[in-house]
Length: 409
Image (cartoon, rainbow, N blue to C red; front, top):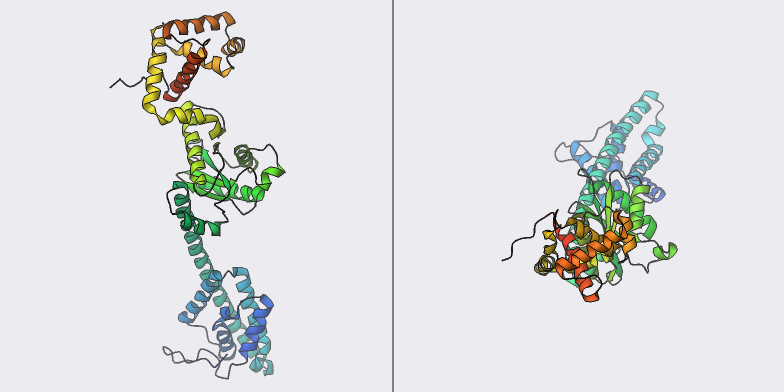
């Protein structure tokens, strides 16, 4: 290390007037002991030496330089603790090498020198940590912005594939593999996805490792991307379903609030992730529209609703043509429609439907006969039974008869 140049603003030297080449071994020794770059010391050692020999406090521009060194440490991946250790290690090593202090027999002079060094040390470490924290905050904001932008492009499904693959690498995603997309949505009015995301990220990494997983927030929901069922995590826990697993993790981690988890199926490739995401998103929409009371919904269980929902005009025609005659009965269509719904849910077994409806089997068979009389569709004929079942599902999707069907054009 060469002799420090005078400060052009103050005219005072920024380091001892004696040749300070002796500071170089001090810095190198401290850097080696702390396993940190010696460049992070910058002009810190001359400041300490100047304080010990001349009693000078550093100027603001000199402390600003140390603050920049803190930012540089963060940018280079050197933790704040290691950076502080470097500065403390350099300070005591410098103190041992101070020839003026060592030779002095005046205790008061030694005390003043030590006090000056400690003041500079306190000032320098303070601004060093400030700079480190400021840089870390900026890095975190930048990483969050990059993650949010990447997640948006990935889930939208229309970005350039080669560019997506390149951007996915830092996040540990191999877009050539199968991935599930799971959405976690709050069932409480005041639920916050930001509250659940950190806990879920820890749980996901613990279960699946830090590769092929990504946790982010989008549109007020937590988006979780995990490997398909061929992943080792599923092999270790056979039979586990990713939606059920994540909901159990929310309860195990005691994340406040009530949450609904929707899991899309696993698909390969860059376009498989947006496809799985769209399935999970539609599963949440259908779960709300159908009034499902379950905490975990699966896209595969709602595929028929997705098919029906794709053609709104066709499902309206089906419900209107097949079921609207049920409105002719006294009290409206709801009783006969509920009987049809429970009959199909019971696997087309009249006795089970009667048990669920808390009525006699004769009542169920009478109502089914009345449906056939009004609509012309009988559950005893396979082709007509299919039309009835599809119409019942469509009615639930449209919330009919509670919500009137729109008028025919």
